[in-house]
Length: 176
Image (tube, rainbow, N blue to C red; front, top):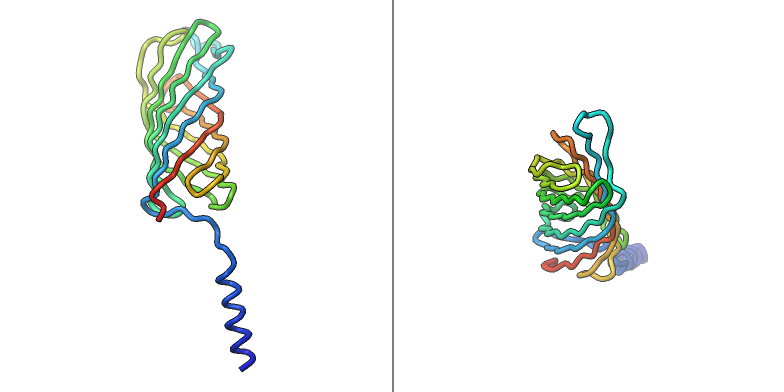
């Protein structure tokens, strides 16, 4: 009898311990981001690599959870650069996000495909295919709100590589 009471008490304690915060299928999120941006592209003779003196990026994204750890994501990032002439890029991608764990600090990695539009400075006006690899850490403030640091590297079958790093703020809903 004492073992049953002890066993039931232990089960009760385990059930009372709060579980980890979890996303779920159907959860949605909207994010905005701002930060530093840079690019690397060869000059006309393909002899040296051109980079800007400074760059700023702003972005927005939408996510829809497919499960606890995986979401699909659509992103748009616009960046402006100075140094070597004013230039700009716009990157639109769709892809997948994998959250490594869902606690207060949520590291994630993402991959996406899309198109990079570039103009000004060393660029001729054009659109090229892009592969985006990124990641970051979100810090949960509440079930519906988080902020964090994000970074992404974009390149593919093109001569232009872009890099962004900055702060991201996210609003979530639909997690019940």
